[in-house]
View 1 (tube, one colour):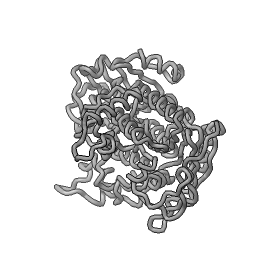
View 2: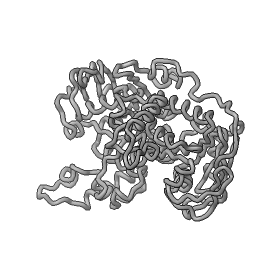
View 3: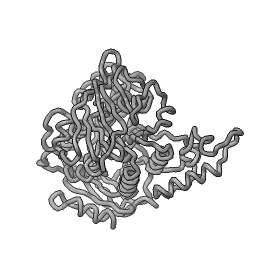
View 4: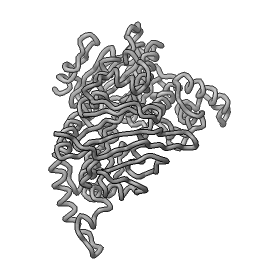
Length: 498
């Protein structure tokens, strides 16, 4: 079957204050095609997508949809013409039901009402049929605020499909869903392809890109680098196109000498979350924690850090039993925690890079009842330099940084509290390949300096590439402790589904 172009973009340019965010970018999208758009954070992907869906205008260039030029269109107009987007950040109304969110703004169109009264029954009926067609078991009557992030993502996908979209843009659609839900999403994408729907797919997960995409276009620094069939590329060549240089092995060689046992956990349990958890971590060691979503990985870290209270078990630091009632206690004992929820728990959006970096260690800069501004600036500037945080300066708002640099700020904040052991929960979620490489080097460096690292990750290559030992969890139970030498993806998955 010959796939016909449905969307053609040529010479798209957009500048901010004289700096080009996009510079003559092009893209040809065919009906029934999954077209991956790749590039580091700051490559121009977000600007490109915002122009396509009508959020911002281009300075120049041409967008042709089904042979007709798109000009000066608003988001609603673009949707009606057949382009929908599933945003990385959930765009739902928490107090409305699933059905109401799916057809938000299109209620009269769905119910055919001319009286001003909405037919909630018809909206619910349409939503039920749509969710069943997708194979998603979510009640159309439940309010969005009661759904998990993964379920909210599925509703966003349903909303895009309900628009009868000809082109669907998916921005990091699997960043917060389980492997089972990823498989469900990929099945939905295949069904959409069979119906002739074209997908623009944005993800930092290389394995996904090669599994689901037909074609790959790469942007770098706002410029078009090239387009190739997915079967023509391998991971190494794709990374080279994205970053413009050879990165070599993504994972540093593990040759760090292990020291004393820093943290030990015995028989830790929390009702309905996890039970009988036993592990330790030594100075210079990276302990990976693997398992499917819901296995209890994050819950264990939260309990040790004092965010949640375990029902039983003991925690030892340097051989001494300790009692942690709050994160303040954990920090005083030398335990750090980098949350998987970077934007919700990692930083304060309204604050600057400096304000966020020093947040966990302000007591070190106290001068009477005041903060010693010179001391704070000196320490945070050094940390920003050490972590190679790319910003216009310490006063820049953290929300304006790329995902990778935001993550470095969160890690830097924890490091300034001088931890002996640090939990890293999904440390590279939502960051590009270049930033991943830098974070991997940082983790290795921290271990080399004698810190104990406990890393939770859903990416098995990351777990296998960095960990000295791997603890596997399944349904809240510890099912295996594997050495680096014997661990494989297949073995980890075997224990993860026990």
